[in-house]
View 1 (cartoon, one colour):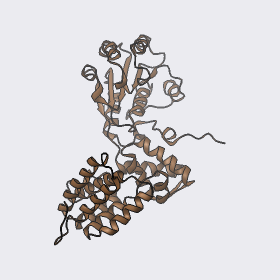
View 2 (view 1 turned 135 degrees about the vertical axis):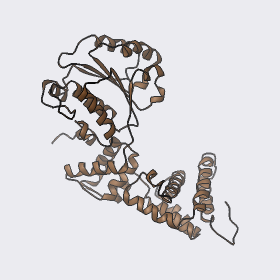
View 3 (view 1 turned 60 degrees about the vertical axis):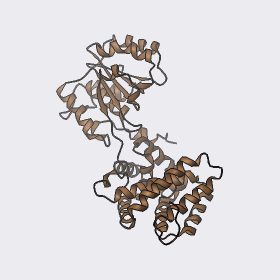
Length: 371
């Protein structure tokens, strides 16, 4: 049987041009390679799964390439590139600061910086999750980071820039990686499915992309999981089941029923959701996010704030046209109150039911309402 490689590893970008969703950043790095204007320390920061470590590896390979292309990419043919691709390069050292965060670990790394590169111009040190270093380790690292040997380049990566000492930040060129857009994730998932001959429903990939919340690695992991469950034919219904996602249509239905003040139908819908194993607070929070999205869809200027597929964005716009602004503002206030009170409530289901009843009565006239 052929060895299975997870999609996040199998389809990991090997060139700057294949990195998804970070065009401005990769262009800057390629220009630095072309002009030879390389800093001695870089800091790549941003959310998880957006390509920080991947770009660090591509950059490390490219600056040591003997024959880089005209647009700043590695040739992938010289000895330096081949040794890197085969994981036998001694010029590129990776350190996981999460498990190597002591002063001794940093001192050992500093000792390695004194050894010149065997092949290529630079010895590159990639330190992942650098914010996990202890304060004493940071202090031991400072002097070397400020004045390293001419043949040494440091590339630091972190998900939490605010935890890094200002003295470290001031010594680095800082690159902020963006969260992946939903459409970029969908396009890449489609590419992977086509390469792997996986059948899919577009709506299923949209759901995976939205749940990934801007992380490509998370999206690819969920795609592998869904493919295992669906056996090569990824459908929307099966993705909902496998990833335990509440169908977004439930939120659209609640708002439509609220506009018609159909409290009984809303309570029956809530009962079905709870019986399906979903938590009441999770439903309330999801409905609050839904109301926020409708509010964003009301104005063309705030429409780009919606992180969803084009099809879903159109659906929000349609509901926004028939949904009064008063209902959305008041609903958000009521739903937020429910979220705050949920943990301390002795009867959580009743709290959620009362919350939905209040939402359904916001625009009701001629009867007592409970805003």
